[in-house]
Image 1 (tube, one colour):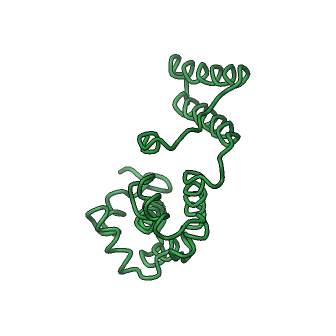
Image 2 (cartoon, rainbow, N blue to C red; image 1 turned 120 degrees about the horizontal axis):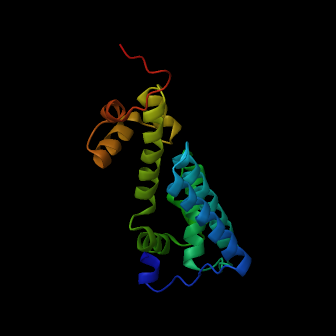
Image 3 (cartoon, rainbow, N blue to C red; image 1 turned 180 degrees about the horizontal axis):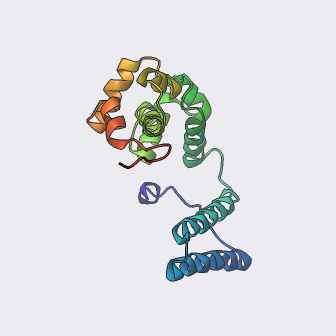
Length: 184
């Protein structure tokens, strides 16, 4: 939506008749699950939705992006960040990946995401840490290093800045139970 607002996004998903038919069939399967509500219907409905999203995503990747356009350059950078978030990254690395000067990168990235590249990376790392905190017993220090922070104190400060609580408090409040539940 931000890209459409600034008038730079012109790539649209166009589906063939066969693709539209496949999409309609998958939507019908979702509706069928939600209508009849047989055992496991929620799981099946979500499963069909994931198939639909995957299908549409693949169709969209076939849309040709001009690699020198800012949206393509930032898309390439966002993809890289999502795959390499735990690695040490400097602004020069990001400039090379996006193939932009520092000022152009900062301006364009902010226009598209509403954040600076470094703020985006920090928030991405914090988001990844949330999953670790919910689902593992690893120490805060180990988790901070796993997601790319070299200093666990800096990680804790950034986490508190974003969530208003420490990683330890977040873990306590959002823990996903594992193993059997024992009732007395």
